[in-house]
Length: 81
Image (cartoon, rainbow, N blue to C red):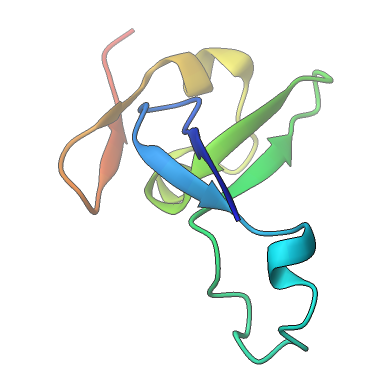
């Protein structure tokens, strides 16, 4: 797994994939890694932690991603416009 930072709130995240997860055979049921890359309808892609993914609306825009901020270790929220 590699480490990176969330494009929304900036917290450190781990990204699944590569040689480190080659032999997991799905036993982790998707729990390895703490972030996913979302590709938005406007063509942009953003690496977001799970708390940020939960905080964005159903059809997020790049502006929604820019407004994300970390509340604590487990939650994120959309900041003011």
